[in-house]
Figure 1 (tube, rainbow, N blue to C red):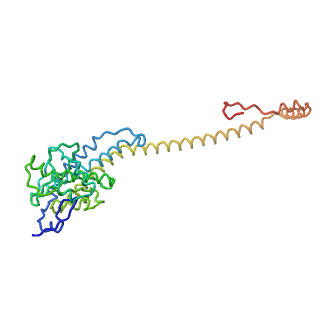
Figure 2 (figure 1 turned 90 degrees about the vertical axis):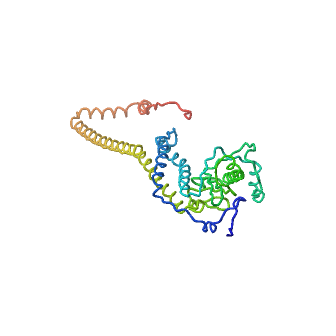
Figure 3 (figure 1 turned 30 degrees about the vertical axis):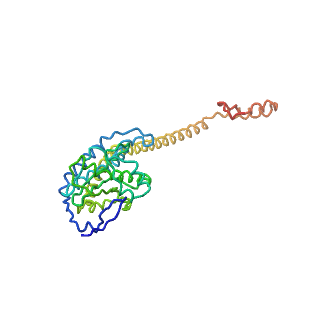
Length: 340
């Protein structure tokens, strides 16, 4: 059989047409549900245990913020573990747990930075060579049928990474792939490997660039040769999302509901105080009007004559004395810089 092939970073990878000729393992999602539920329960327990840190912007909502941040951070690891559980469903796949990270040679990274894939395919690097940089893949899966080592890095959302960061990640993955065969032969009892591929999995399925090794969750079926792999991970995310939202709802109810109740109570008290004040003002005004009327009824006519006499007296006083009596009172206040 003649196999067509495409290249990702200088490494041959069978195309979808090739994989169509290879039987796919069928996955029973229902059998995986208990394992998925345990995984979700463990992850949610970590979310609930995450401490809330003081935050001046989200003051009073730190507990809710901590849960959201923790759930976002842990989702990538959840997807990684879920894919590992799915991979076990294919008996031809071996999940390799590395004892140490893959060494990253600067020579290999330099080649990948220049996109010189043809030179990279000819490199043969020893895993025991000293280096300062290492890369540990999220998953290392060996396909015995295809003699393929698949190096996987799982991201919750590739869109949140800058192109330069993704290019650096890809070069490190490719450099690690150059030594993975030697590592497997030295340290692990794995099927023989003839080539190595890399795959950056976008958990959000928003980005897909096969030429750069970026794949969506929907690509898991042919990457792992497991029919239903992608839908299984979708089921896992649904379970996780339901539990996370339940945690957020509980914290909102415990945190936000009392705040709203306090605001309603405060507003109600202010309304009652305002109505009471208005009632008091009305009664005071009525009392004053009544007192003024009584005063006019009880007024002494002689006092009115006296007021007239005082006015006449004012007219007869010298002008400078009358003016002095009409001067306004002095305003008293606190000195300010603008006063003159």
